[in-house]
Length: 352
Ligand SMILES: Cc1ncc(COP(=O)(O)O)c(C=O)c1O
Image 1 (tube, rainbow, N blue to C red):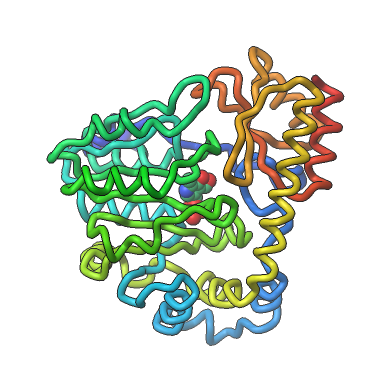
Image 2: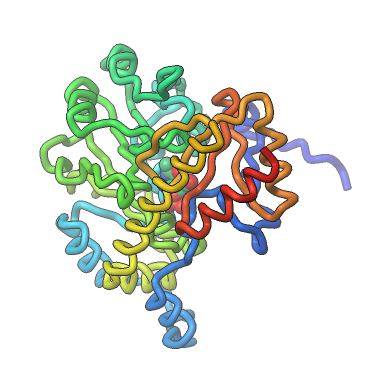
């Protein structure tokens, strides 16, 4: 067959392929993607295994009931949210709705890769503000200094992946007050672990967008369901840029059931927070420095051995993420239960 002579858009040509290591993870202890390590609420599994009918699969998704129930759960009006195919679609929609080619988008560094991904895809001019060296604290003053009237979007993960560090509601309010011409996304994928949210501010700040996901504390990463919240007039615009059936019916049914089981999520979060303390203590015993985290993962310092540590753990059936390419010497480990942490520490000690 002849080679293709099709030429992609310049923005696509400039991009490198992005392949997170999602293959071959099934039979390992997966401490590498910040997932829920015990799975979703049993009610969700029960729904999918016992109650889904052939008719449920034959019909295009309907969102009305889900929107009402999720709006009640998140204490917003139905006009203030849209369901998304994971947070990734929320980021995509925000960029598609507000950012033209060449517009300035501010992201932080290091942060969740999809902010840069969708900004690059749109051909945006990306300004990257580094987290503070040494502490990995949120660089508020540096970010405020970068904002101008031509800034069109600012993408913030709070708490941030992979640093685990977060910022305050007051700091985000300062950004919103300065960035009057920008759509400001606060991605709260790890909200359940941090307890810090700006969601109630969507009525006060017309440039604020907040995303939440069912992929982390709720244990439903495979289903791809999230929510994007903003002032109702923004959500009306966002929905114009959204395909009508982007979230599949099973994900929507699962989300509706997941929010009925608060006890499950609350217990999991409590367990993770206890396990995180255990991890801190264990790392200290091994004299391994770490960064305190507000999420269900922790960055620790493996120095020049970061890659080797990840490889050795992999051969023992444990997956962790080498982040040394963006934060020298650092490895990120997802926290599950205290038993998971104990096992991880035992294995780490063996290879340290
Ligand atoms: C900050 C942040 N946002 C979003 C996501 C992905 O969320 P979703 O599965 O809802 O697309 C991740 C996943 O690692 C993340 O770290």
